[in-house]
Structures are given as structure tokens and as C-alpha cells.
Image (cartoon, rainbow, N blue to C red):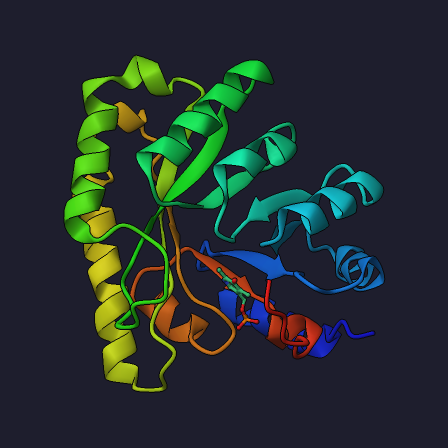
Length: 228
Ligand SMILES: *Cc1c(COP(=O)(O)O)cnc(C)c1O
């Protein structure tokens, strides 16, 4: 069991006064670890497996804000729609349409981030710049079709690399996209979240304009690898 209180406090100190939200990424970690972080005051937690998230949400305190940070399959939206606080990984219009549908069903407006592919690897999910632009134009053209989703901003993952220049270039690119789209009237002033930065690169991400970081292993220790 591992909740690393000192590391956690160190991160909070670095974030203090910056207006950056810390999402503690608890995927694969037991509920006891989450409760330790909760005891230290943490309320935003990130998960990326639907089944695991649903199980944890059912048994952990109601005031936890659950972030879904994984790749979301359309047929699983219904399981998290009743309670999810923010869906970070929206990477298609059809996924957004399904979230809209579930938002109607559950009578809530579901906050979402559009995921942008900024890394050099092919394997990561997300829109490329042209697809992002096309997606936003579709929403703008028909806002009523998306009245149960609220696009709150953008999310991205940088390359698996310690080349700081490469990472900074990717983060700066996402920040530029964020600024480009932030003031569109269609968002009603609520496009304010830029989710970028993980354990290994969060300080750099903040210096490039991030205001939401998703940190797992620094807070909870290394994870067992899993394939799913
Ligand atoms: C697992 C994960 C994280 C956290 O990764 P760490 O390196 O453990 O901080 C952040 N974002 C996403 C999308 C993840 O899947």
C-alpha cells in the first residue's frame, strides 16, 4: 500500500498559488490508498478503466470528483454518465454524441475535454489539429445538438521522452490551440481547462500553460503494468 504523503505535499507546494488543479491518478490502486489521499484533503481523482472507476465510485465518499482520463468506448459511456466529473479523452464527434445522449438521459450536463494528439508516437489517441478544428466547427454549427455536454477545454499527452525541448514544443503547441479556441462564444466562457502534465513532466507542462495536471506514480508509487 502506498500513498506518498511527503511527495503529495511537495506537489501541492509547487502548485500553490498557480491555480493548477491536481488530479491524483489512482488507476490500479486500491481504495485504501485513495482514502489516505482523501484524508490528506485530495478530492479530484483520475481513473482510466470504466469498470474499476464504477466500482470505486460506488464504495468511496460521494464528494470525490471522478475524472475519466482513459480512452472511452462509446458503449461504456452509460456506466459513468451518472456521476463523472470530467471526461478528459473525447476524441471523436460520435463519442461526444453518445455523451450528449447519456447527459439527456441522466438530466445532467457532462463536462468534457477534447483530446489532442500532440506526441510524436503514433500510439496515442486524440484529434490532430485539422480534426480538432473540424470537430469544433460541427459543435459551433449545431450547439443545440450538444446542449448536455460542456466542452471545458483541451487535454493532451506529450511523448514518452526526456527530451525537454521536444516536450516543451508539444506542450506549447497544445497551449496555443487552447488559446486559439478558448474565447469562442459557443463555450459560454467555460472553456478554461488545459489538462497536460504527468508525474515526469508536470512542472514543464505548468510552465507551458497547463492548469490541470494528472499525477499518478509520484503520489501512489509505481504501478504494475497491465495490458487492458
Ligand atoms: C496513467 C495516466 C497518468 C498518470 O501517469 P503517471 O506517470 O503515473 O503520473 C496521466 N494521464 C493519463 C491519461 C494516464 O493514463
